[in-house]
Length: 357
Image (cartoon, rainbow, N blue to C red; front, side, top):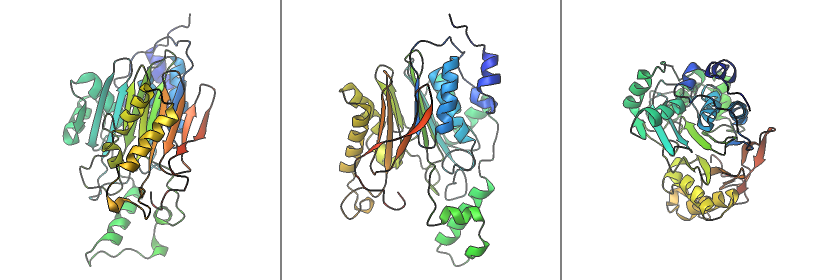
């Protein structure tokens, strides 16, 4: 029999280097089972799946493992669409969204437009566990997090502030806003707005299948750059930014949140599994629905296709995985218990995404 891992060892070893608040609400460790675990993530989740797999092998709950994994990205100031260093709203304030789902209990929780809290995914877990609700927003979500011991954190880094300021200066219709000349720009700002800048980061999703065949998932984001204050995308909405059924599989999304909200794409994917589709085909079906239902002309290219991108990721109860994107060239990260690697995902269109998508 594999001995159980003590909670104190989980904190000391498995969560080394992570904020203590990541542990708030985590379940006790259990002896690992004999099923092969799989962890998947969006393309910015290499360290995420490595941490999640480490914890799953030690006996962590799959949701707790996924939350600890994405916490690494939430703490990364160089990822400008998640957590610390996220690009702020149009008023210069960082607002975060996150959601979680737990397979064994079919529970879910979320927070939206939360400010000054570094780990919204961990707060979402407490919404699931310590309230009779699924979603808390704004100041209510912040007060709930503080009540449970989450510290205040200034999320707007100096680089993100300079990026926001330059955007504001170059997009203002007022005569009193004058951007600095290019040679005086901070190198990081110049890189961010440069033509060759590759936006390799994005909202992060993580789905985990543990050694007992149970699933957990989370999606966390700082949302659309320079968004209207209070704007909420798909990430904290159950059925849109993520969904799971512990008897079928788990799915999540990144990309244009409004498109996923209008199609409940993650729910569509899991229901596709119920109908016998493979993970890849279920994700492609979600892409097809987004395309077919995108009726707004300003959101179409010259051929009537979406001028934005969405990406979907899925893992099944038996460990199969796959993904799909509207446009070609996208990848997902997979850890199959042996190693973590980037895996190409299918696409609805065989061309590269439109500029800015």
